[in-house]
Structure formats: C-alpha cells, structure tokens
Length: 418
Ligand code: FIX
Ligand code: ZN
Image (cartoon, rainbow, N blue to C red; front, side, top):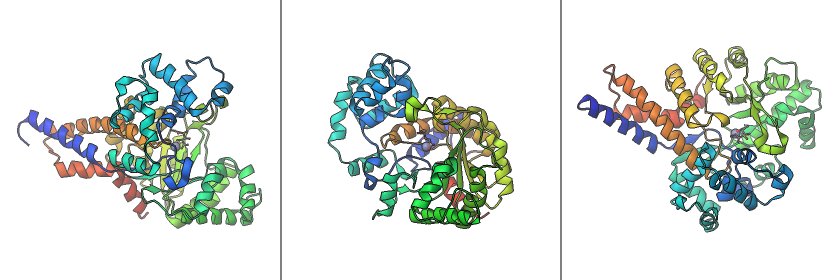
C-alpha cells in the first residue's frame, strides 16, 4: 500500500467497502416473515407511526392521548408528519431514519409530501417487499422476537408454518419471568401441570414448556427484557424461574440466555409502546450470573449509557458473555460512535456492535445504513491507529473482521463449547 497518505486513503476505502458490502445477521428484531400476516409491520404509515415518533409528536401536539389513539394509522401518520417534518425540521434520528429509507428506496424526499410516498407501498406485495429490503440492505438473516404468550403468534407456530430461513427465531419469555402470577394460568390452559407455587412439579413442567417451544421454533436463544432493579439471585418467581428452569434448559439445549436490561416499563402508560423509559442497572448481577453459571452463555445488552463501560469490562472477565447492540435510546449516531469505540478498544472484535431492533420492515434500511456509516468511521480510525505502528492490515483481514462484527462473532458464540 504506497505512500502514507495514499495508504490511509486505501485503508479507508477497504474498510468502507467491507462494511458496505457485508451481509448482516441482525441478532434482534421485532420482524416476522410474510407467513405471519399483519404481525409484520411495513410501509410508510407504519414507519411514521413508529413508537419513537409517537413519543416525539406529543412534545408538540396539544391533542389528547385518547384523541390520538382513536385516529386511524393514516391520520396519525399525517399528524406526526405535520409536526415533526413540516412544522419542525426532521433533525431527530428517528425522523432522519424515515428520510434515509425513502431516499434509499429512490423516492423524491425533497417533495416532502407524505401522500406522494404512499403509492409505492400500495403497488408492492409484502413478499416482494421483504425480498427487496433484504437485498437492498444486504440482510442475510434477522432474529425475531417470538412470544408464545401472543395468541396471534402462537397460532402461526401451532399452524402449518414452513420456516423462512431468513427469519430465525428467539424465544421471548417476558410474560413468564416478569408476569408469573398470570403466566402460570396460561400454561395450565395449554395443558402444562403447573400451579402458582414453583414446586418441583411446576418447575419440571415449565422446563417442558421452554424445551418444547425452543424446539418448535428452533429458537437460537431465549430472551427477556428486565428492569433496572433486576437482581439475581432474587427471592421472587423470576429469580426461581431463571435458576430452576431457564438456565438448566439453556445449558441442556446449548442456547444462550439473552438479557436486555434497564427498561422501566410504561412510565407514561398513555404513550403505550412509546411509554417506556431507562434506568441504570447493576452490572454486578451479570457478572454474578456468568461466574455462577460457567456452562451457560449470556447475550447481554443494557439500555443505560452509564452501564456500557462496566459491561465491557465484565465481558473481559467472562468468555461466556457476549455483549450486543446499542439498544433503543442508545441507537443514535453519537452514542453508537462512543460505545463502539469503547467496545473495540476494550473487547477487540469479540462483540456484536449493533442490532436493529426493527419493528417495521423498512427500518432495516435506515438502521443499518446509519449504523454501517458510524461503525465504518470508527473502524477506519482504529485501523489507522494500527497502521501508525507499522502494522498494515490487509484487505482480506479487514473483510474477515467486518464479517465477524456483523454476524460471525454471534454465530461462533452460539457454536462455542464452554
Ligand atoms: O424489549 C424489547 O425488545 C425492546 O426493544 C422493545 O420493547 C422496544 O419497544 C423497542 O422497540 C426498542 O427499540
Ligand atoms: Zn426489541
């Protein structure tokens, strides 16, 4: 690679090309294959109605919550567009994201006319559109969030669903761990011999429930979101279920337990999905789990910015811990930049820098376009620092590293023998 200046340029080109061309495994989304019907959200009105924007529109509109929720999706989208795109510059990340998606899809963003974007989505089928979005953003596979307590989703899994290899499953167990007082009654309804008391018989049946659903879905991991107050060990149904059911089943089936820690649910219930907030969590709980259960794998993302450094250090101590994603309120360019930089410095490439958390199919386009840009920028600087020592990274090495960051590291962790 030529003179210092040209070497820098060639390095930047090599990194940008590798990041732009890598096929992504998106380890956490709320997307579904077309076979799951309207569980899969897509199209311009769903994009504009994303709960991130619902939260933001209420900073402007005087409309009551009731009046808003009584509106149709299209009326809600028109209102959001008026306040967040016409009457104020769409400078926020979630607003900019919609414009990035429309731009990548080749639409005339400068027209600023929401109605003019709708025909595009009306003229395509969901199958064509899934193919197109996966191709445009070079998405190899997404991991879903599959909740057997959601009746619409249950029906799909208990029906004749033929798995779509682009959509891998993850068994989501929030209702089981965070709502046992009602969850056990559903398990009983479904024929499991459980009672509210977590005695040996109930524990055995909960293990059967988890095992059957992991196998039915061929779930890659079991996942739960947890509050900032999450503690373990804990004298609670959640503490007992994790110790007696989740961890033993995960170890037996060699599936990671994914913990998404730090969400304060519904601090403003009127905002529905947009009503959740964040709180600092105790990283010591993650360290304790990794230390006490060395045969278990833990996938962890934390919602509070303040937890990111400690979490990186915890991952330096435990090889059964894989840190993933800049979750939710962290998925903003300035924070993705800061967190990715810190993670590469403390963990090298043994991290999953990002997941999309896409709730609407079209979001795969902007969330990955923005994250690719930020991660490529950070990587360029990291490799440039490397080159300043005389260690010249080869193009193939950069491609190898990038493939690991955008999927390889995740798959290797799943295959890892502890
Ligand atoms: O718990 C989760 O999986 C969260 O990602 C969601 O509940 C959240 O509403 C979201 O969409 C974040 O981006
Ligand atoms: Zn999510």
